[in-house]
Amino acid sequence: FDDCCKLMHNYYLLEDTLPDQVVIVKNSKDIVNAKKEGKLAVIMSTQGADIFERDLRLITILQKLHMKIVQLTYNQQGNLGSGVYEPVDGGLTRFGQQCIYEMNRVGILIDLSHVGLRTSMDAMETSRDPVIFSHSSAKALCGHRRNATDEQIRACGKTGGVVCACPH
Image 1 (cartoon, helix red, strand yellow):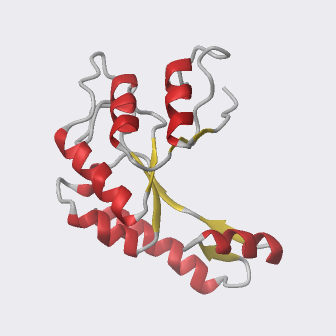
Image 2: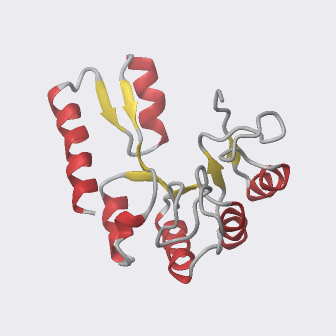
């Protein structure tokens, strides 16, 4: 959590020192305005959620600092569930369920890239808000283990979410 806050601070310094070039995204209008003004729109996100350190209060703190997207795991087992490189995917943990409830409550988007199959399916079943696979392509087109199966793609669509294309 401490390292995450320090990194976020660096992006805020960038916005402070280059306000004519960089904006930290606080809402969707910031993206539209940045495009109109030719600015770089920085969306705060994570790869992995161990930054929560088993403390749900940290989710709200990060949301207030404009964290917009949280990826549940990064390849390996984490506090919230299993990553795609785990030999056994144990699914979403109880803490993972609680984190999803809290992220839904405060408006943080859940990213399932790098998340194991069972964990991602559990997450989509748990979340009442849309989820995304921000950088996972279709496994049927490219068999990379990080790409989404047809089952995951259909389940993501049912949440109202999207699977973004990734060139691998």
